[in-house]
Image 1 (tube, each protein chain N blue to C red):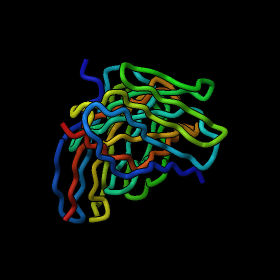
Image 2: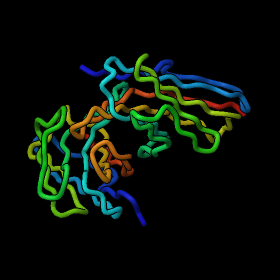
Image 3: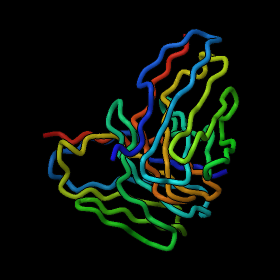
Image 4: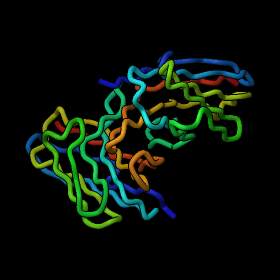
Length: 112
Length: 111
């Protein structure tokens, strides 16, 4: 039972490059989330998926796209990376809205 | 707009001390309050979740309380240990799959 897993753990991109962050959970949760964490700030929600087949914008969605591939997997794509997207990205899941959230280990992304 | 504040930003205590971490929120319209622990370079580990109908939750040496009327939650850690050193985050669920996080309190327990 791995919980929430994320790949890659670290990534360095040049401005304008694209990449996809992968997330998977094995807890049979309905809802999944992508957050970013920046120094001195709380986590901010980028996108969420309430259930398989649905996705919605969070607080800071600009520059990102997401795909809920199936109930287990939720990916985050940066189409044209910018230095402002340098951050630590966390994926999380919960059984339902307002349920306990479980987090992955994070992806540390640097955009040069 | 809902905001979650954690004071102090950092705290250093000697081993064995009981301590309280504070979390305040500006809008009483939160539906749950979750406390997390984050070790350096790691993800968030869920410690306790309090639903709005509850006033407190306990797990081992940890006790979390929620007072919606005053806009406050506290995390009580009994008999602190060096292994408790980490950043502690509180987060308020506002419904609609939205959660507002505090910036955290960095705790250092000295042996």
